[in-house]
Length: 376
Ligand SMILES: [Cu+2]
Image 1 (cartoon, rainbow, N blue to C red):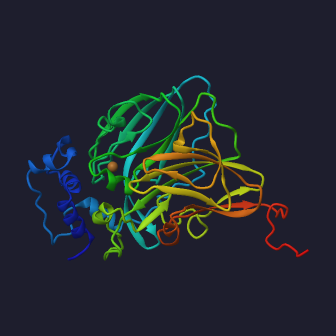
Image 2 (cartoon, rainbow, N blue to C red; image 1 turned 60 degrees about the vertical axis):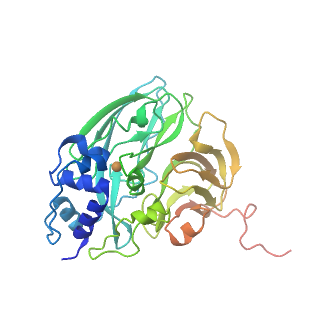
Image 3 (cartoon, helix red, strand yellow; image 1 turned 45 degrees about the vertical axis):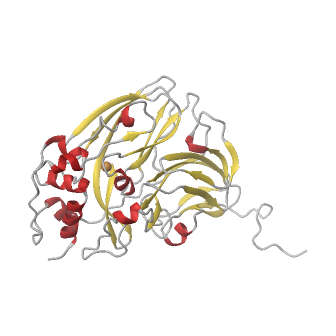
């Protein structure tokens, strides 16, 4: 019987990371010795895989029949500004959930996530605050995971200390010493695969004085997804490691799914004429620079690299955001319009799923923009 379980088994056996993970799932290898890839894998007994059977991995079995879940983060759901002036400790839990979603309608994909969403939940603290982090990897996972915070002084940004095999939980504590918007991402072996599959988010360390007041704040993350061109017999787009090596993705998306934040999928973001907004933007990559541009508008203020200790640049049209970095961007909405958030590498917009929409509601202001001016 040829189906995606067999395909998955084959991929696991070809790929040292997946292979090690599969062995863990099959209870052939215990403990953390599998976490560092091929070397530990080679010294372990060979998995006995019956290629004709569909009952080798209960995890994969469940995945095939699972109803796809929404993974696209709601851009309007993020923590409010920190009002407290004295430093505090934030208890944060990241659960490494492997979720079946759809990159686009009818095309299932095995997402790897923190807390079931892409980008992972935005974490918000004030400089000097402490984060008390618990990371857990459910027994239902196939892969080991961890987290590397760019906001951390410490080995691997915490990656070594947070490595969790399926069924494990770990705990670290760190102080946020410098302000800015920083990526956090999985850095387990095969980290490009893990990040491409969804394991990245943004940690905002507000400067002591906080950020200027705005009417709205939104949260967007960009990443590219490398899959085979066609779905398999079970409707899955399987991961394409060769395409990733060549940095040639099928999809480049905002918030994890093709055109997720548009009326065609989960709905556009809505604001009103005269309001202001701030966008926290993280580029997970793993490989492509984003040329992030609001079509029909401008970044009124832009903190490149999310470096909030600096003064913002003003009226930036297109901001380059490297993979593994962030930007903090502000916008004004003087006219009613439809704004398309885009990567100005425009083939990604036209044919790879990258766009989000901000609808600015209100009456026309023909002094600023007149779509039908009368001839004099
Ligand atoms: Cu991971």
